Length: 152
Image (cartoon, rainbow, N blue to C red; front, side):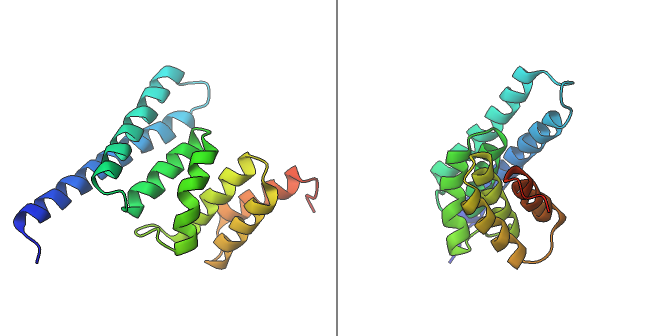
């Protein structure tokens, strides 16, 4: 039985997750401007999103939405080892609730590729493609092949 207190806590959690996602999106928008953004401001924006995600994990460490978002932020801020350690269990258990597994596998592949773990990256990208066609996954897989010297 869910109490009104439980429902209120869940609403508060979801609102905080939405706020973190907004800060995260703001960071993504900033880094896409390449050279037109204050690097310190972008770092502060990413830090704000990370802080909220980490507080949410303290509240519910099993929430796969938070784990997925935090791992994605880590990949986007070149903390690929952390991203790999967070995404691997999500992908292996299929627990990326609320997110297509394709996105989780694709981000895992990108994190591996960024660290030159090409076999692991290829496996992750192939897993992502098993979920269906995706321009983003195909682009990442093509970049991996180019980096390996096999563009054909």
